[in-house]
Length: 322
Image (tube, rainbow, N blue to C red; front, side, top):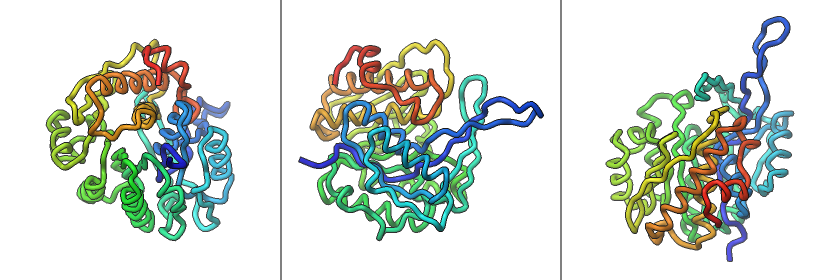
């Protein structure tokens, strides 16, 4: 048996979100732990999975805060590298009246982009049932080479490779470079989560059903397309289905919703012991509903790691027990 259920490699950072104004009328920001791979791992850990994170942070107040937060959330930090040479990556987030976000990044470079291949914890890479990667590790060297090396090693060791393109235009030189690097990981991937807005950059096709088929034709056994408040579309070896979202009383913040969805979905896959192509249509319905419940609970709280739902709440909402 593998030591870990899910390992993720990628970025952990600080999301500074608006928190009102000072007496002088200046905008205030609240410090929140974030980073898509870590958010996903925390959700999966909440679902009972053994998780671990591989990444790089600065030896600064923000990095120390992230390290403690991740460890306290039940995620193994044995692959977390701390450096004096680079500052922890920061993201400044603005949220509109519908809870949708826009970003501004302090990452030139950020510590997460400087993970070197020699710093990889290969014991973690080679001892997990699922190895997850996001495209932000592909924006810069040396993290790009480290990411590819880790994916290849995990694949060789028998892990299911999970991928979240998580396209952020501001972090790429241009769309052409983003497209090239995002697609470079596809040959390794077994299960993938993309949003409907990421279909075009990932496949060249904006229609999510056609995009899913393109990815299936490339050998990806399970394709999940998140559709915002419309739920998700899932295509895998035994068929395709749609999972509906759950009613939300008020959207507070959509930050981390996709990560909560994917953490819950991967937890279901992990606990099933099945590969993506082995999932039945019944599995797809159940896992999709479970993941949508996790996302719906997430958006009703302030985003990031604190908003990752607990297992009991997700099971109660969707009526499915993992």
